[in-house]
Length: 148
Length: 148
DNA sequence: TATTGTTATACTCTATAACTATA
DNA sequence: TATAGTTATAGAGTATAACAATA
Image (tube, rainbow over the protein chains, first blue to last red):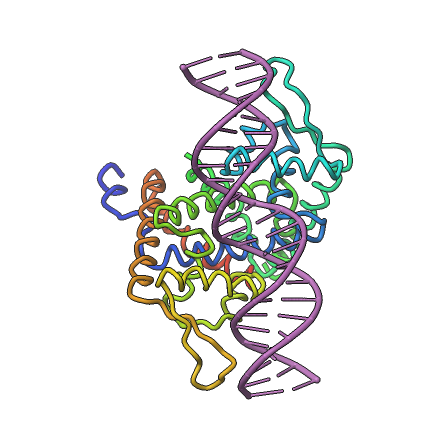
């Protein structure tokens, strides 16, 4: 592998970009439909998911969503106005504001995830057990690779 | 497998939605960076890619991009103003307008794809040949599955 | 000085409804 | 009647620059 992995060109050309765009558009469509079924935009739904298992600061959300911090302010404004999140001051650093889900927000987030999960489940029924089993680990590995 | 593939529940729960959102955000960030390096928005870059190997009508682009047809009008306006595409009437149906890439548009699209490809290549060097080989077919299979 | 969140601004993306022209 | 593309409109996402509060 020392002189075998490197010479082999990594996935390049060969329509990889086009394939990735196709997949990206399909996932985007799935997220959009699931979000709208809950009265959310995709960005709002994704923010809620990131706030589900932690209480992220605005800067952390900006990094997770790969957008400018100024966008998070407006995004949070709209979610707060609907009673789905609250802004809570960080006890250790008074510059920080942390996003907490309300009970309504947590319920809506769970509903969104359920729609996505069942939507996926409905489409992958044609796959073999092996194919499906290989999907999640590969998703996670690809995410880790891209994030690094 | 005839009575083994069906009873096994398809990928559901288990943080699948969160994993998918994570991957989605990373690919979005990669596309955004590549697009901006060419002076394009991600939506503009994706439209150009879809117009690279065909001359899609506005309705076809709306379906490929999963957005309303009215969005394609404005998207095409901005690309046409920059001389990257032209609107050409369909010879068989005078209601249809087809998007053609100009020489500049084709060059910019190729440059965008090159940035995406090399950006991906730079990140997947740590993968084994087997892992990389399994990625593209799975991407394509997943796209086909989601599109159906 | 540096960092966090905000505001102001401008542009882009998005969907809905109503319109024109073609079929 | 139905379809393709456009326009008008309103709301949402996006980045840049400048700002106040805090570290």
